[in-house]
Length: 211
Image 1 (cartoon, rainbow, N blue to C red):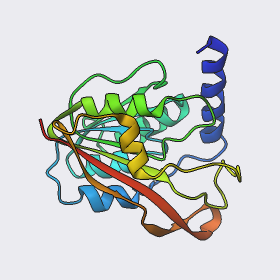
Image 2 (cartoon, rainbow, N blue to C red):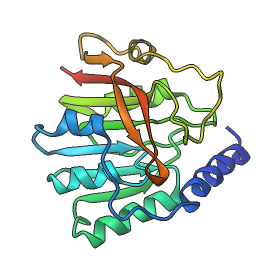
Image 3 (cartoon, one colour):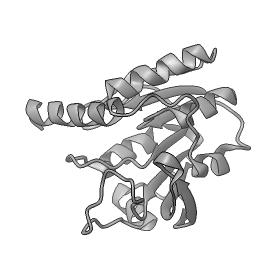
Image 4 (tube, one colour):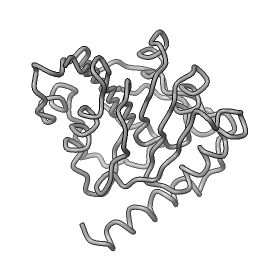
């Protein structure tokens, strides 16, 4: 990857977040809540933290969160919001271009919600690295778009959304050490700018490290 490609990706995602005001109280993703609501808190890595809804929800529940995004704007906002809520001691916000670097540490949970980008990204390699960062018994939750909401930045009619089973297969994890606990495509009603709603499909993959 060239320096210009990396700079273009950063500029794009900084622009996405700078173009809208910081969310005062960003909501967590539904699939995270249904997965982690009853899980005892530990160390969690939030890949692509965005507006910080997942990070703040986890921190409020006692998790120690490493929040990561390619956008310095997003990272700064998450860190500032965590501090203002008295959660600064539970949130470490870091900027990473996952094509070049990956946060250090071992985690009880890694979440990757809608880790899509118009730029080249070897997602299978990133998710494989994420799975290897799990502690024994830890889980990797990958939630992808299965359809595009009308307000999504990506309205390419030719885009193809790999099924959760395909995502798992591409990761190439040893079944002796990792087990797929969930791979399905539920529907939900999403709320977008201005209160608009639309039915969308999520592709949900939950992998557990068993050894």
